[in-house]
Image 1 (cartoon, helix red, strand yellow):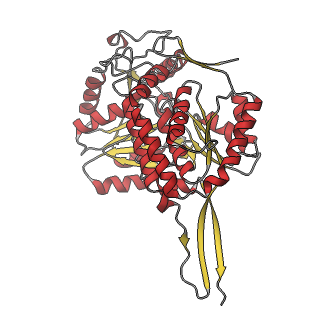
Image 2 (cartoon, rainbow, N blue to C red):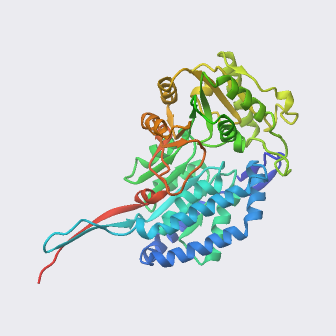
Image 3 (cartoon, rainbow, N blue to C red):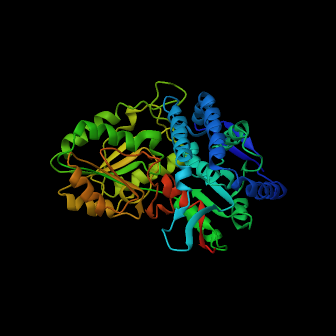
Length: 461
């Protein structure tokens, strides 16, 4: 048996790997377990120096990383370098804040006592990463886990195995001690076995809701922590006072970048009735400017979705929404590369989609968004909260006070004003409801990759 990466660019096998054997899994976990105790005693400043060398090595390989990314998952080559830049931004930020995030927490003065809480590493962190942003997803847990003193084993999607291997090569070149970062190419069954293994202390999973449930179920057999970053059907609201050109540009990009294959990509667009017609017209005009085609062509702005089966599923969801009453306003014939039986799929905007239709309830994970007219802020909030998901949400408005008031009412992990689809590494990345549990990034992200240990020291003379 082999794990094959079928490139959405041309349908050929781009990468093929043999899954790790039972013996290889055992030796990988044993090396991680053996290497971690010494690493926990390495000063944070020395860990940071290694991490900076890792970043330099990753940056040096940026051009090849971008090309391989396009071949593995179909992102247009003109946009692929942005993942390199984003990965470096997050890695360097999480490295820079590590000393503060990991510092002892002083419990305050008390006569004859010294009291503090120390953050200790968990041990071995098992990261299971998805293919849609393969470096950005993995770096969220890999770098802070290592900076916190853990060892890391990375299992990447079979669609993007080279990404895991690039991490390993860069860490080796940076001088990270052997055993602290390792890669396993695994089947689903073997992934579950690794989660069950007593040498694993934490699981950081990014993927579907169904996948998250499977991870949670297996991990529940043990007393270990689990971080789950799952799906989204993210809403945005265009208020009556929005800067419409800015809103149109941002929202279209947020919905269709990466062919809509983003956990925090926009899918539900609620527009105040007073600007609905102008906003809709502007969106349609901008969407029609996308160029769908071979992602290795620098002029292409919309690549294929990850595989033909995904394209078929997206078409079925669009058809279901139309059957329920939505109106498709983008003509597929305007995108000649869009063909049934291929992963090349035209973007679509669905107007007046019923609240219970697929586009307004389900994660489509493709270049599709639904647009609905609303009559007030209150209605917008109700509509935005009418979802099993809660990863991000956004509002376009000139009124910062109104934005903050609305944000307090919307059930979401991140609330944006006048922007979307961006992870600021200084802020906690977290979801609510079916979008997951736990947290990555920011100083709070370190709390999930360490355990608190209290020191209550009575001083005697």
